[in-house]
Image (cartoon, rainbow, N blue to C red):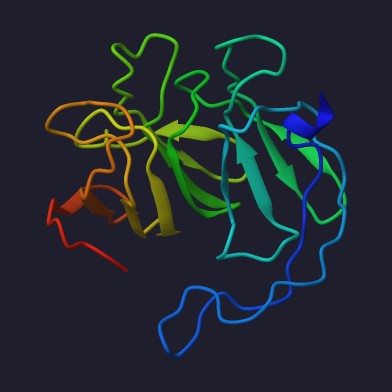
Length: 196
């Protein structure tokens, strides 16, 4: 059963960018095992610091509780390169499949599914993370889940699929995207040709 849940972390040593525009231009290497999480999670959690911070400053939050169908976690854990430590829980309760971005000390988590989201349309919840605690922020423009986030707390983007704002159907591959400036959601786009 351990193979189904995230129990360790990894480190990569290669770049994900390339001048030709490819997302991954070189083989990824140097995987290493880190400390185990204090609370195992299903595959529906989010993190900050991935891609914008060193591997010794990552936060993991939310997700499904192993062995409990549809039970959601509000737990947050920070990684220091060796071990994970518990931090303040998400203020809006347990969620999964939202969009996380930013750094360990200036993170954002928005959207996602709660046990009260119906009919699986996600939520508008948005929270800021200080590295220790979460606080409420401006709600996402519509109920959302299954999207991805990128960038920093003051220059973020939520896009890359997810639920469409016009119909709330789960996992329809929406072209919708919206930027976050640290306090407001701006420049919403639903262009069908949106791409990186």
